[in-house]
Picture 1 (cartoon, chains in turn yellow, blue):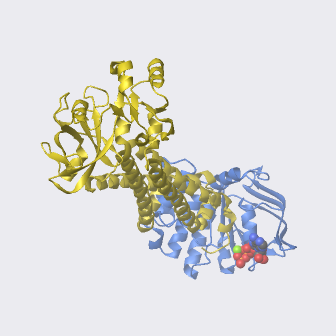
Picture 2 (cartoon, rainbow over the protein chains, first blue to last red):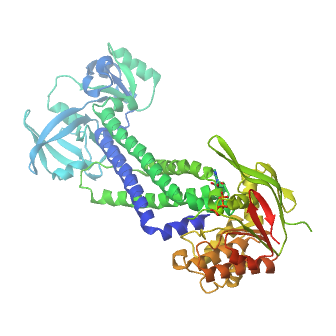
Picture 3 (cartoon, rainbow over the protein chains, first blue to last red):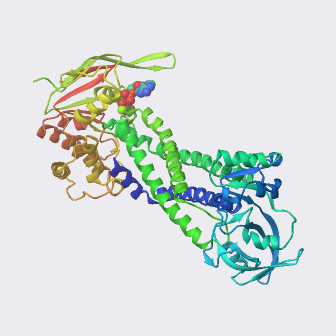
Length: 363
Length: 226
Ligand SMILES: Nc1ncnc2c1ncn2[C@@H]1O[C@H](COP(=O)(O)OP(=O)(O)OP(=O)(O)O)[C@@H](O)[C@H]1O
Ligand SMILES: [Mg+2]
């Protein structure tokens, strides 16, 4: 059965390479689009994905949006020490000047306690410390803008200079790199008279602690990390449109492949009729057809995977692309299933062939 | 010893629009091993229909087809396929070879469909192709063969699963005179040597010299020629 399938592919090389090529293109497109979807998604919410903050106390009317929520936490600080396990979560959008860049660089400034679970640590350079020095650790994606350790980034409105002392990774928020600044340094700038936060965050669920925090404020709700990620502006709509593209690609693949395999089978009906007259069972003929499709699809998928990896190596730096093996397996299995479904459609045709047509007629 | 193929009072017709047209009426026939039986008749007389019924490709409206002592009435499609695979060998008007298989692989295929491939089968393939004079063309593809050579491959293929019955429907229609004689002689010789019951349908009177018994189809009935 398998030998039959392979021999036919080998004999009609051109025909089968063309179909294989279409399969390869469709699969590559699915892989690349989903890689981009993953990349964009990460770019938008990586800081939250990678954060150790798992439960967020947000204003009720903020609709899970961090930027719509705000608290003054002076009272809470007095009533409930931070050692209890909570942290104020504060993000601010800054536009910074750098010598290396003509345009201003957008960053998400995040004042943190360097010893808390909110601070991710560096992959290069020096970690933040509890000093009043205006030093920042930024996401490595800023390297693309020419930022290096030791650079000074300037903020015009408040006339502030930040010195880059280290790089961290996987810390982007709303497509901008996150810059971590020691809390002590931030408050020494006296930009605000109070201790402020967008949200109060904790690492693990703790009923007593959460109740105490709720009690300290007039209003607010506890929200899980997943909901906060969904609340990031643009995240769901961005993901939805990309997932829609992938969905339609797969639908297109179903039709294109079903049509191809159907035509292939139609071309061979006569031959199948003869084989049936010679005693081939439906099972044998369908088996050979499915094996052929399986072989073709597997080879095309392997090539598409290779091609996708090749693409990732030549993509311009800073282009968001994330393609993990989980997705790879998921979409490969989908593509495989799609072509088998396409081939099964023509199996109906095979069952219906009347072997009698082989007798008494010219080819 | 019973005959491998017995047809008993076969009736077969086609529904042509509203009209029913009877093609075979009460056809009875029994073919013996080692013999080649010829069936001749004008075009449209029902020769192919007759052979389809005899070959378990078409079920009769009434009457029985008895293959090796077993009536195949009521057999499932799968059982019929199995009968065709093991007990009947076909030779068609056109050789109907699989275009992407070599001569050797054509024969291997029918053995594989039977899940019987073995070293011994390898030898049988070589021998069968030797018997039809193609021992040198084992690795040729159909498009590299002449019409007569293709038909020889088809003959070797028909004998491959060692069936008791060989059915040939105008196997020489596409061939010239000399080639036709060669092919029919080959079928008759193989049938005799391998002790098969063969039926040869033709409308060429000149080919009857190789056949032991000759029938004509006349008005839906088989008439033995003496
Ligand atoms: N599937 C069918 N439906 C309706 N009529 C059919 C069908 N198959 C054959 N016939 C009719 O049955 C008659 C006998 O056909 P058959 O093919 O058996 O003739 P034949 O003797 O083999 O002719 P030829 O020498 O041309 O091959 C013809 O009149 C044909 O039109
Ligand atoms: Mg005919």
